[in-house]
Length: 162
Image 1: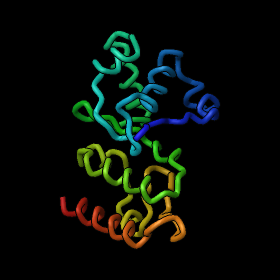
Image 2 (image 1 turned 45 degrees about the horizontal axis):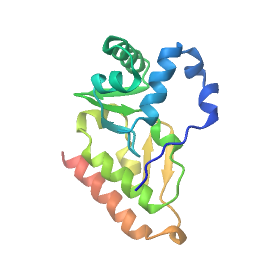
Image 3 (image 1 turned 180 degrees about the vertical axis):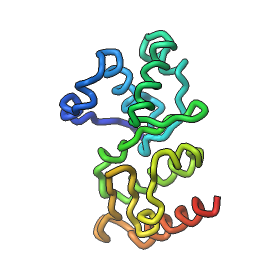
């Protein structure tokens, strides 16, 4: 399956992105589009890998990561990164997309998920919420919503039990 990330042109007009230095813009764009990213925006990434891919010194990468973390744009733990509001740009109504998001969130460390402010109550109701972004369960015409609803309930219960 091909993996692609589409960058909305409004990215460049975002007030946060406008405030960044050119190197920080490059690193932030890399976080959104690198080969290790996934549909949930929570994935394994070392600063060494980012430095190799981008061609910058590790210290510069780590300085960018620190800034993004201090600014509340990313969260990180043990070579894993979570991009806050990543789901904001996942606009598909396909049940397969939602299944992919759930699969990736299950792989993420609990400590990272807690930093990302996932609303478990809304998750139980069939809505995945991260930050101010709401992804609603797709309409029945787009797939098996009962199966998807059950999956959301199961994962919400699983996370509460941890």
